[in-house]
Length: 283
Image 1 (cartoon, rainbow, N blue to C red):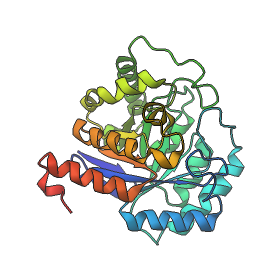
Image 2 (image 1 turned 30 degrees about the horizontal axis):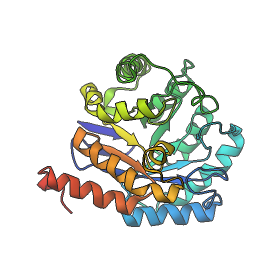
Image 3 (image 1 turned 45 degrees about the vertical axis):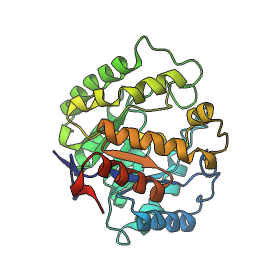
Image 4 (image 1 turned 60 degrees about the vertical axis):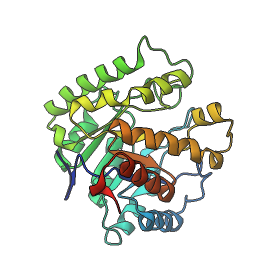
């Protein structure tokens, strides 16, 4: 299928795309606010593009567990100037990582072409209406609860079945609001309202989410459950575990890997594709 994202058209199945993370926040779990200024964020985004990022994901509000919400005006102040600076400097799509329709609207106006929405579990249709009118692509992510409370006591009878049921219902709602499947990316939301066993079950059964015919995004980069398994407590020590998940994702049919470590992830993905016999995706 062809994914429509504003002026971009991305072919799936095809080579696994690498989504590079740019956190324009002072409290990111992964980089400690090193790219909080516009200048540093733009420089980092350009470096990720040089390393081979196929998509850049720009976020101005931390969604780590118990994160404090950011006012919309402050979030716009963080992300919009970065997007405006990057347009014309790069040739890859820009994604805005936001839960707020007003922020998404301004980011899309600035040149973003994908909305990465961790709060797709909401009932308010304002975000979907914003996306529908823009022509942008939409990342529909599963989350139980909100970032403030999602890790307090996540509970499922069958996490994979329940995430798939969520996707089925959301696809119907999105299509009713004018967002067709050619513009939808699905993300099972590893670490968002899931405990260690939930995350492992989702990773074991990633292939089940490919049945919807939409590109599948996997975001596990540097997450705390990797440290619980491997003993790697600092985020910098979680690269190997992140790459193991990325390789598994490629085998299971994941189409987009969201990562803080673009160069290492790109090499891992290309090697995995080669081993799987995807000769046309070799670089």
